[in-house]
Image 1 (cartoon, rainbow, N blue to C red):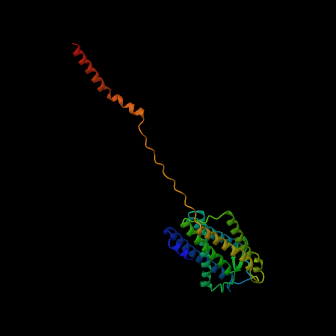
Image 2: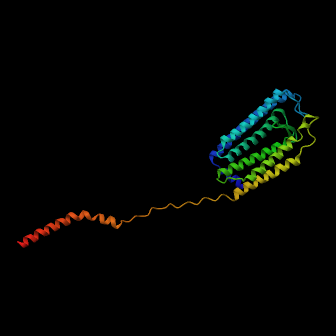
Image 3: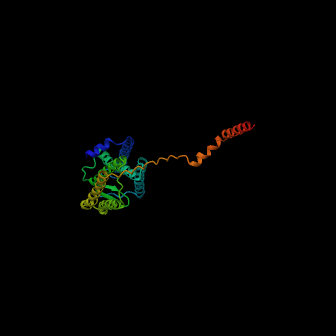
Length: 275
């Protein structure tokens, strides 16, 4: 934890600004999501939200599906705008998603007094099938998303990226699908007599715990063994060129006129002597 605190203090101003803006966006988006759900529950559950789930008109169902698609698109776009590299973009997406989900439940709690506890059952999502489960499960996923996002952004800012191998992504996707499977396996029971008798916590933990541990190990490896700095190449200095004998011989013709003068003066002296 001390290393994380030091890294947060050394975070660049640009990364701090991006994290703050993404957090504000996610808080506003989570509150807006809560307000929409308040309206829907007052319309379809005036006596209070509870299981079994009620069947809503098909046109309202289509609108709800489109709203969820629009929500995902907004989260993806804010991640793409905030990050610079692909992994950093993904980190901001995780950060926005996690904050949005937690603020959503806080908004419902403040507005409706629901959920009564973290073990209250909820309809979580509709794509591709209805997701149902206790509120605690998505909150745990949201906390893991925020933690992973902060660590990824810290490593990218410090020039110590995670650089996960393809096997890492394959395993994390498998763990994520396991968590989703724990939400959708018993969705039919939510439309029957009431909430499912029990949640598949065992299946949830099979996906959640290894996924978190694998990420923490990858982060620890990047923190402990930073990438080696490339060696700087020495600049080659141009060699000094010395004058060649040919160049020296080329300078001799400039003295020829003086030599001619001395030779003509010698000839005149010989003529005088012969006389």
